[in-house]
Each structure stands twice: as structure tokens, then as C-alpha cells.
Length: 501
Image (cartoon, rainbow, N blue to C red; front, side):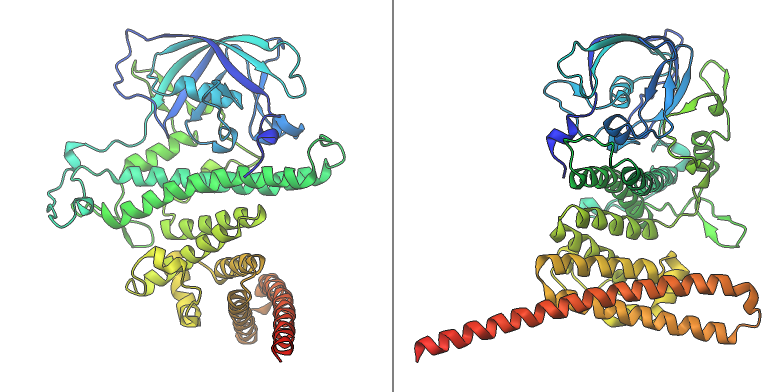
């Protein structure tokens, strides 16, 4: 999605030498893997700068000097990191030369398969941006792993439940030792990566606009935009994989023997204190006990996964709905593809998002997802006022979310030259927004406390009118192009008829 020339302008890192020693007192049998939370202490860091070295929070930090509040790696410092939680800084790995695009990528490579008590002594060399012809910078890092919090483990005998083995298809069989906390962890990581991808776009497009004059002359503006969108795409696509697992687990691996708990709203949900504990540890709200009995406070460790000026980890809603998150991520992935010109895949992801909605009403509408990709016409009954309320009440999917998907698919159709399909989606967008505008006006007329609702109503009205205007403007372009194409076709027919005569 972005040129290799752009990627190689990042500082490149290479592990020159690595020594690994294990602790004799370590009792943990679990090794760090994707999604594991590692607590580490920097025993020694020999670097040219005594103050330490900035750890990149994003790929733009080292590329274009856009500072995003990086943390500093230095001797006697501590940090915590979730492996695999920053795909945008590790997406340009070059396995053949062992070079890594970020220091985070180097650290993750070291920590993969580590256990608590492991000590790593590593020599690293790096070549900074615009210094390709200079000797690489070398420094030494001594790192100790204090604790590894692995993802929830399946296999607890206390959670076993009898299952019926299906002979029709072994893929339909669910395991008896399924741990529902694992789905919560997948859901949390997907939500976090969605937030990170949105931050990469919103923050860096603004920074790029402010720093456009000082950007590297070799990089044109279009290429920089593609780099930002491809970085967000890396986060969104990984999040989509994780939430798809959580959604599948919700449908397939629910353990009916687990005790039901009642939340404050009076609804049942299957959960345990472990998933809440895991999230509290990750967000730094709760201490953990190491293998040696020592209490470790997460807040004492610098959070390498933090981005922006908001602590997103404390904002995760425990009862986040997988379907809503999947719908939003499909929409966001489609937007990234639209921005870099991958119009066909944009339309496919939008269609898949709409397919998910249709399945909630009638799972037999289409035989398979692949069939639906080629089904360009969406039944307008899917977006009646009653159905819209159903989507919101059950999945918290709003009409604005649906409009975004339809509008983005219309844009992709327009770019592909599929005017009939684009026109249909845009007419549906306009009908959807007009109905919501009428519903909002009717609500205002019947509202007793108009003063309290006035501000919210005005904001909603502005958003609806803006979306309506955008849809109408694009529809005008679609109609104009269709008229031109029809005129060209008639002209060709007349010329051919004249020649035949």
C-alpha cells in the first residue's frame, strides 16, 4: 500500500549480538506470545545520549519529526508492553536482512517466547534517517523480564463442560475447555487497535498539514497521506482479525454451564473476575503478584502502548458488543482502502458490513458471504425506522454508521465507473438522511424540555444535513457522468448506423 522507498526512510535497526540467560528461580511455565503483557526493567542502556533514547510511539515519529510524546528508554527505567499491539511500527519487517523498522520491533522480537526472570544482553546498531552513508550507531541494552501476563488460558479443568461431537463437520465441534475470558482479551485488543488507528489518522493528518512546508522534499504530499492511511490500515485490519475471533467465539464457544451473573441493568452475561482483572492490570489500575511473591504495580512501569494525551486503556467498555466493533472496523478498513485507491476491496468490505446487518434479521437471505460480495442491490427494508431502532437497541449501530458504509461504497463504485450501483447507494443514503431529519424535527416539536435538548438537536441536525449534502453532491456527479456516457454511446451508435447505410 505504500512504496518501499518510503518505508526505508525510517531508522533501521539490527540485532548485532544477543545473549539470553534464564532465571533459576523462575517458576512460570508460560512463554510470552502475541497479546502477552510483559513487564521489563532496563538494567543498563549504553547510549550516546545520557538522557536516554526516545521510543517511537508511531511510524511518523522517526520519519518526519512529528513528535508524539514518546517515552524514554534509559538505565534503571521500567516499561510494560503488549506484544503485537503496534502493527503500524512493525509492518515493514525485512526478514532476509534481519533489519527492523523500529526499536519496538527489536524489543518485541527479543521478548517473544520469554518467561519471567529472563535477562537479555543485546548489542544493537541503527542507521538514522538521512544518515545512510555514515557508520551505524551501536549501543548495548541489558533487559530483565519481571513478569509475563499471558492471554487467558484454555484448559482449566474447572471450566470443562460436556459437548456433543458432531460427525457432520469436525470444524463445527467446540472444545470443552473454552475460556470465555480469551474472547474478552481479543475484544479489548481489537478495541484498542481501533482507537490507535483512528488516532494515527486524526492526529497525524493534522500534524502533516501544519508541518507540510518542513517535510522531507523527496516525499510528495500524496505519498505521505498514503503512509498515514496504510499505518492506520495495519491497526484496523489486525483489530478486525481479533474481533472476528471474538464474534466467532460468542456464536460458537459459549459455555452454557458457566454461572450467569446479573449486571446493574439486570441483564445476564457470562463472565468471570479474570477478564476484569486482566483489563485492570493492563490499564495499570491493579497490582499483580510475581512468581516470587513480590507485588508489582503496573503504574510503576511506563506504558509503551500509550498514545496521544488520553489514557484509552481505562475507557474500554467491558460489555463492548463484537458485532458493532466489527461493523465499525469494516467501515474503517474500507475508508483506508478508498483513500489509497483500492476501490474494489473497499466495496467488498462495505458489502460485508451490510451483510452482517442483514444476517441479524434473516440469516438465510444469502447463502454465503462470497455470494453477497456480488450482490450490489441492498433491500431498502433493511433501513426502515423499525430496523434502525433494532440495530441501535441490540448492537448500538446507528444510522450514521450505516450511512458511512453506504456512502463509502458509493464512492468506490463511482471510482470504478459503476454508476448504476453508485446511484442506488446514494439514493438510499439520501432517503435515509431525509427520514432521520424528519424524525428529528418531529421529536423537537413534541419535546417539552426544548431548552435542554436544543444543543443536542442542533448538533444532530447539522450532522444529518452535512451527510445529506455530501450524498446529493456525489449523486449530481454520478448523474452527470451517466448522461455523458449515454451521449457518447448514442453518438457511437449513430456513427455506426451511418457507416452501415
